[in-house]
Image 1 (cartoon, chains in turn red, brown):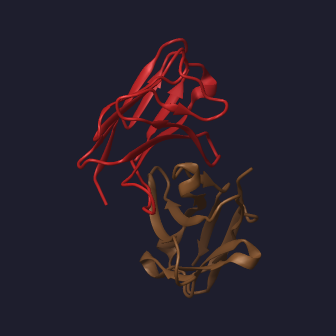
Image 2 (image 1 turned 90 degrees about the vertical axis):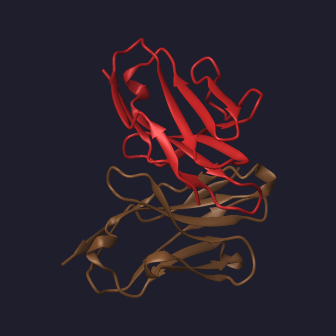
Length: 114
Length: 114
């Protein structure tokens, strides 16, 4: 496994602003993903963070709203842009070392938009 | 389309009783199967995983799960539940063909009566 650190752990933000969430892993990983967990809901994949190239977004998620960076094999950021109360969720970073390996999750960032 | 069904939203069991949480999936590829647990305010912890081989897999904390291809199921079991097992449990499915992305079930909230 790995130590996956997400920052911030929680935040309360004003609508219309943006928040950048960081995910740092203590070892190089092949795959990094960002998930959203809306209140009382399950997890939904936002995008796959690709090292050195644009992220691959799932249906319903767009780069303008959720820009993602992955400059190297241990770090990624997710920005939630122009926030509205509907963006209030837990955002989780997930990593795996490649095919046929399990995914591990960070502790999540609990975002509240007011 | 890929989907995971956890038919029980809530389950309440007495401490010391046995537990079975149901999971059914619909997937267009050979699945990888996982069970994760989420305690309040926490991230996701991997309980167990199935990639191939023996269809009965053992996990942490005394949990086990059995993959039944004919029933498209991966039910989680524990012979004797402890109060500390109270949490939310998520079944998830992935596959190499889908880039190791996970599709999650809606989750089952387990309550333990003393």
